[in-house]
Structure formats: C-alpha cells, structure tokens
Image 1: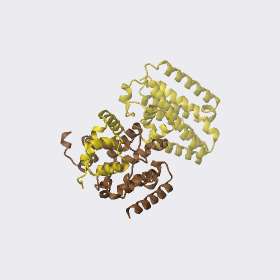
Image 2: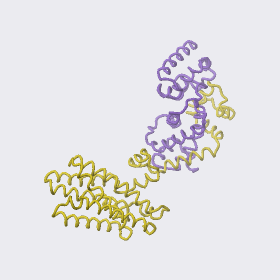
Image 3: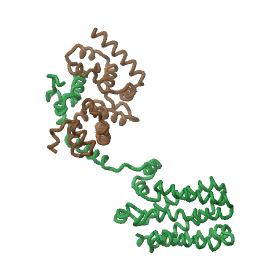
Image 4: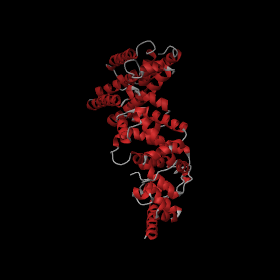
Length: 175
Length: 268
C-alpha cells in the first residue's frame, strides 16, 4: 500500500480504471475524509452522508475510465459526491439540508482563494442567507440551477431570480 | 496554484465542526479542491471506524455481481431477494430457452392452422411436454450452473426444485396460452392441456427421485408420445383431453405429488 503513497491522483485513477483495488483503496484514503467533512456541511444526517460517500466511490470505481484527465481529481469526485447526496435527499424532508450557512462567489478559483480578506468577502457577507445559499450551490458546489433548487428545496425559477439579485447586489457593493 | 494561503490545524478543526463563518468556509472549500495538503489536514477529523465502515460497504457493492434484468424484474414484483437469485440462475428461465420454447410452440400452432386435424394434434402433443423439458433443464448436474452450490447449500432440495418447477410451469403455461389464443383462437383447446401438463411435470419430478432428471423427463416424454400415438388413431381429443383423460391426469398428478411428499427426504 505504501508503494501507492507517492502516486498522483490521476495515476491512481488510471490504475483504478484498470481494476486496481489497492490504488482504489489509496484513493479512498485520500479523498473520503474531506468529502465526508464537506458533505456534512450540506447535510446534518451522518447516515445520509455515509450513503452518499459510499455511492460516490462505487461510482468512481465503475466510471474511473470516464475521467478525461482535465482538472482536479478532487473536483471530479466532488461533482459526483454532491449529486449522490442530492440523490440521497430525494424524497426526504429537506429540513436535513443546512444550506444557507455558507456562500461564495465568482466562478474563478483564484478569486475564491483570496476571498476572505478582500472586498468580495465583505460583499458576500452582506448578502442575505437565501441569496448566499444560491450563490454557494451554483458557484461553489457547481450545481445546475435545477440541482441547486433541489438541494435548497426551492423551484429552479427561484434559484435564477435569487442569483440575479445576488449578482446585482455584489455588483453594487464592488462598483 | 497553491498560494501562500493554507489551512492550519485549528482552521481545519473549525471548518470540520462547522465553526467557520460562511465566507471563510467558502474559501476553504474552494482551496480544498486544489490543495492536497489541506485535504490531508481534514483526515483526522473523521473517525477511522466510520471510514472503515463505509469502505466495507463500498467493497461489498463493488464485488457484488450486478443482478440480471430478469432478477431485477422479480425483485420489483416483490419476490424476495434470495428466491429471485435462485430463479434467475435457472437455465430454462433464461431468455434463450424461453425463446426456443416459444418458437417450437409457434410452429406447432401454425401447423394446426394448415390442417385443422393434424395441426391441432401437434400443438396438443407439444404444449404439455414443454414444461417437462423446462423442468428437466431447470435442475440437474448438466443444466444447472449452480448445481454444486445448490447441492452443498443448507437449503431444501425439494423446495428448490418445486420452486423452480413452479416458475418454469408458470412461464410455459403463459407462453402456450398466449400463442394458442393468438394463433389458434380456440379457448376450449387452450384449457384442455393444462391438467395433462401439470400431471406430466409432477410425474417427471416424482421420477427424478429415482432417475436422473434428464432420464425421467425423457421417460415421461416417451410415455406421453406413445400414448398419444396409440390413441390418435381414433379421436385424441375425447380420449386424452376429454373427461377420462382429465381425470387420469388428475390422478397422475395426485399420485406423483404424494410420492414427492413421501420421498422428500431422499430427494436430491
């Protein structure tokens, strides 16, 4: 198992695509913890989070070949994870979702990295929790309007209008 | 690009426990996707036991064979999982076998459309024997891919056999009914062979207590065709499928079922 410790994520994923179980275990050891933590901030029920993480890595095992080698493996895994969480939440009371606590911003990662101390961070903090939740789900979580609506328990149309309002307010503060 | 900004252990713990403000959490999350070192800092925040439990579930899911469409259909219909699996590995419930049976019946039925007398005879001769063939192929050394496992499993062989026989019988009867009604359009003709079919199938199962399934099936089929040929010279429908034939079928069924019940312990 130690032989795999030095491997990069893309190398591991390639081995997983070829059915390498130990590479898969290494990948799991690397990415499961933060995925659990981050999903736990979207859903307060640990059982649901565990199911979502489980589904995510089963999907990783089965579709490792589908990863095109573009971007971060972590981002790819997150994309699967947040959608599996949505699947888990389907048909459940949406009270489980603790959305509205967090936020974010423009799609640019670089901007995000420095956000806390910049004007943008201040601007974001001024947004109402509803608007911030929408910005978070679409920009930070990378969800579509429809998926964001599902996560937050609001219609897709509402996601769109809130996003527009959020952008307008940010523009005003930053102008 | 990992900038100078990184999480320290305190921030990692705060984030994991939801103590960071929204904007800071967003920064952390955006950074996490790009920084393996900071992702690693979150590892101590999740109990090892929890990760191991999820991992066990993952390996179980990854190792499990994907159920066939037939098995999934059975599950949807409310059949318990283990029963569905048993039925799904039954060779005569495989699509290929069912298709072959359907073709055989179809030709028999089409033949009866040509010459009303002999065609009907062909259909009546084939339809009751189809479930017998199906049952023979449903179990036995040569036919059952899970034979060795079934043999060693702590599971009643009689129950397994009857379960599969019932499933095969159901499929065959449905097949013959549909084809018979569609091609022959004779409701009366459709009903008369059901009891003989049941009798022949049960007889096959009863004989399988002594003989190899293939042998017992062959013997029953030979018997059936011989009897058929003997009476066909006169009027086959009144004799084999009339009240006398139906009563005889019922008797054969009763006796065979009784034999199976008596010998259920030796059944293997």
